[in-house]
Amino acid sequence: MIWRQVKVLLILPGSVLVLAPALILWVTSNTDAAARYIGPADPGFWVGVICGAIGLGIAIWTVCLFVELGDGTPAPWDPPQQLVLQGPYRHVRNPMISGIFMMLLAESLILNAWSIAIWLGVFFLVNALYIPRKEEKALEARFGETYLRYKANVPRWLPNPFPWNPDDTGDNA
Image (cartoon, rainbow, N blue to C red):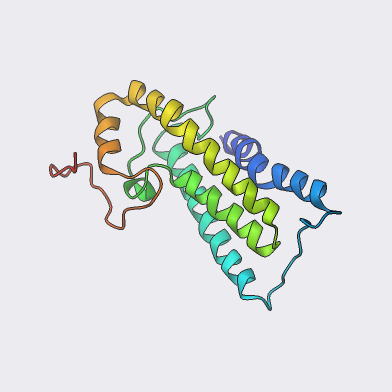
């Protein structure tokens, strides 16, 4: 069971948060775009630490929910068998990706690396294209009316401060 989550974390966020940024930093190391660590004396460092902590917390929480309530993982090869509609999923449809965005923002701030900020933008664009075209279509096919109702009531990217309750009859749709 533990290996199931570890494998997903190493492959998915590991490649986005560690492998790609390490490659970017290596490629840009002897250029004007090289990272310049700012250190704790700079307020940007602390903004990065806060963003990173929030992102990490969200990512861990969502993976745990997928395993505990969804009987699966975030990986396409081991998707959840149940639609998860609790925790941060009541506020935003893609909190796991939002957590990754926050951690990439943290990396770019702490390392003062525009190249990582550009990677964040590329990663966002890829997800902005993939999620509505592929992932949401697959979820509609797997979970039918339940997912359509969820999709109509919970925003994709920007969290709604008021959590959606799937048991309420006053849907926004």
